[in-house]
Image (cartoon, rainbow, N blue to C red; front, side, top):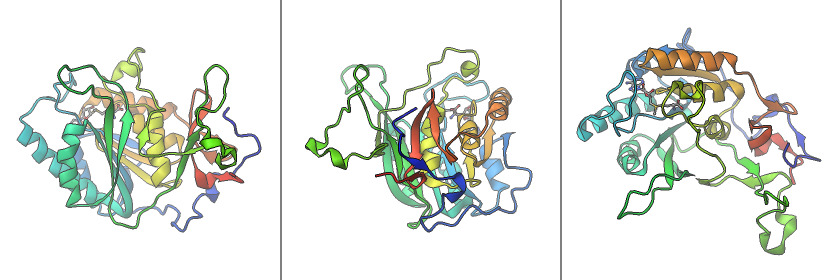
Length: 305
Ligand SMILES: C[S@@+](CC[C@H](N)C(=O)[O-])C[C@H]1O[C@@H](n2cnc3c(N)ncnc32)[C@H](O)[C@@H]1O
């Protein structure tokens, strides 16, 4: 485990101390939660009431001719953006007043997506997820994907999240010296910024993982969920693919609704979701990868300093 000695972790049920209301059940979603729906996401969202989910996490197709089973990932740009505007409008409608929407994509497409979101929601951050791509020649080497973070209103649910301090792999010494002011170093970890370089891409090797061609790491999505929700809040994923967000939500004790137009991906997502279970450290939900905490809410770290 990480350097947690001496820290007391609060229980998951202590978590809403910063003035936000605890999750409340939402009517109109009967039969939809904790399920993966094999359907077009716009159709599904149209059937959902306004102000009903806490988070929309969207990882849409990038229109880069990826080989999906049920979707042609190569449509004219104007058609792609018209469609983007339609699903984003629905996504913002179903968000709760204190809810957040995250859109993951390549930077070029996110500039257009942001133009749509600017008219519907409040800009919070452009999160850069450092993830090296292929050299393209006569251009800068792409080294990040973007995650647009918008909220429905200015006042939204938000929790600071911490990640473990970076240390030398060999000697385990801290890599950042705080200019000699060691007392400023938090006992567990640093406050996460809008540049993330501590989460690695999924390597598409195992049969289970390769049930979908472009899976995201579960703990990438867990960090977003920890930042913006409480236990039992509802996470909606319109393009659930292999189910990374479904697993993330379940591991963090949140409710989940997912959609994908491909029946095979839905089956894989359901299987992964069913075998997932809650992950807590000393009673607090945390994002854990290979036995180490990757992200935890500051509010859950009692006696943190
Ligand atoms: C980039 S992938 C999502 C991958 C997912 N985040 C994961 O980690 O596995 C996009 C997905 O959107 C699905 N899709 C495309 N159009 C859709 C639509 N109109 N409604 C629902 N799903 C759709 C595709 O089948 C594909 O699985």
